[in-house]
Length: 196
Image 1 (tube, rainbow, N blue to C red):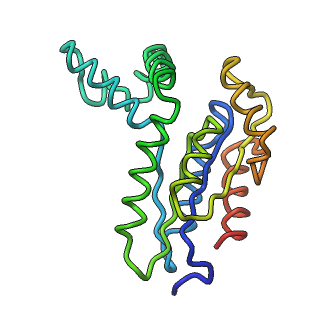
Image 2: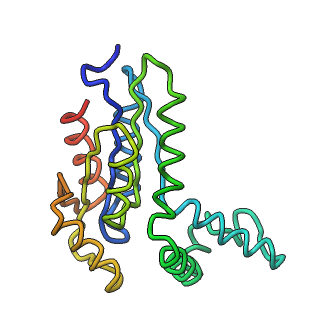
């Protein structure tokens, strides 16, 4: 059954580290897949992780699943390389990650079956320019969501500043508090019922 609103959706999900963004995206994906919808999760940082893995490969120390920036433990322990590489690349071109993600989302939208509404779930939105870039280049309805978790604040001044920029530009449509994973699932269900 095709949904009533057939315009492609892009959910841009923000919040501080460990707020529940990935859990929220996974829950939304479960809700949306089927009934004329096809949802997929995307991340701005995936291309950054791949380039950091290229450094590990070049130095002869990459090991899939272990010494690999897609492995959570390794990523957390060696986050400094990702932060510095990301900061450097954004300094060269502030839209570099938005451009890469835009291309991935556009392909997903273009190659979805005609009778299916594609829904992209971006679970690591951090900067206002990322929203502005996607809004300019994609013909979609963008829904912005901030997940907050009590007791968790910005990891650093840069994260605090980027969240403040998004709030001051009034680009966040929904701000929801989720105390635990059950709360995140409840918020995902609420948001799904608004946009299904």
